[in-house]
Amino acid sequence: MPVTRPPTMRTIGFLVLSLPIRLAAFVLILVTMLVGVGTTMLWVGIPILLVATSLMRSYCAFERRWAHQMLGAAIAEPVRRRPAGPGMLTVWQARLLDPATWREFAFVLIAFPLGIVEFVAGVVSTAVPPFGIFVAPRIGAMHGELAASFLGPNRTAQLEARTVQLRNSRARGVDAVEAERRRIERDLHDGAQQRLVSVAMSLGRAQLKLDLDDPTAVRELIGAAHADAKLAVSELRDLARGIYPPVLQDRGLDAALSSLTARMPIPIEVEVTVQPRPPAPVETTTYFIVSETLTNVTKHSGADRASVRVTRDDDTVVVEITDNGHGGASMRPGGGLAGLADRAATIDGVLTVVSPVGGPTVVRADLPVRW
Image: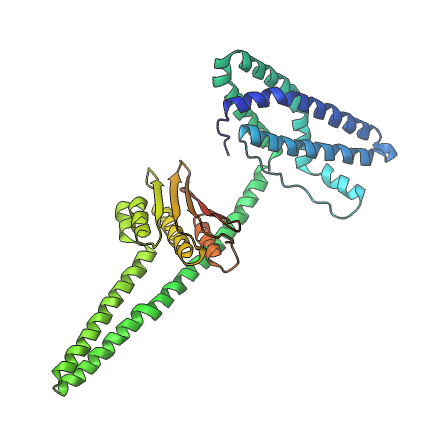
């Protein structure tokens, strides 16, 4: 993933402050590694090399955190080779054969001379503001990409992780679609179907009363059938709105969510900024997540107000629903929030919930616009 342009002042601080850290790491790790290699034939070198690789892993973990904090470069942990069994020798063999070990060692070797160049750039940036404003952030972005290539997972590990993610996403998507189908069947059976059966029965009784020449009873039965028919139409309209409301297709998320929140029993602030308009599956998933979350808020949270914020950038639509209820919500297996997470997963999205006891509760969904 490309590294975004980091903040100028943090980048300058990173360039200046990293040199002493890299110098200490370079000397300590390289000396320990050389001593370990030199004494390997005496067996004492094995534990020394284990210490050297442990120091190297600790330094590289620090570098990942440091680059993320200062440059905004999110560098994942590499996939490491696991020891085949217990024992110091087995652990060393696993580290020796692990490609991540050698990539991290290569980074340690280049980090110090690179740090000298970056330190000079940082000093120049403090003395020459235009250099710091225009050049230093580019140096920081390049450092982030370089660190990710050495300290992050390799291409094969990334593809394997992506494959697992897509497999899980597909399975959760199938489960979400099946759950949605059962919900629709249940709503039809318990709602509109019962109303239509009542309409048929009322009309059948009215026909019998008509044969008996009882116009008053016929009028009452036809009125009851008419009322049931209107309720059935209303329930079918609500069901269709829950699947894909026409206003969403015609006017987009802003109008659809405004219409949705207007029917809620508590005041809800809505902010929607999603230009250009996202694809239809993203809009549908966003509407469903907001609708179900607000339904849960009004039923279970005890909140007296809430807010909905939907924004997008080039790659992602971000949905945030916040309420001032009593909190304590969590994603339990089979629960409503887990179902929303499964719904988001159908388009490779991620749903998170932050709900400390006492509130507030924030439900956030990150939905990609390309997949």
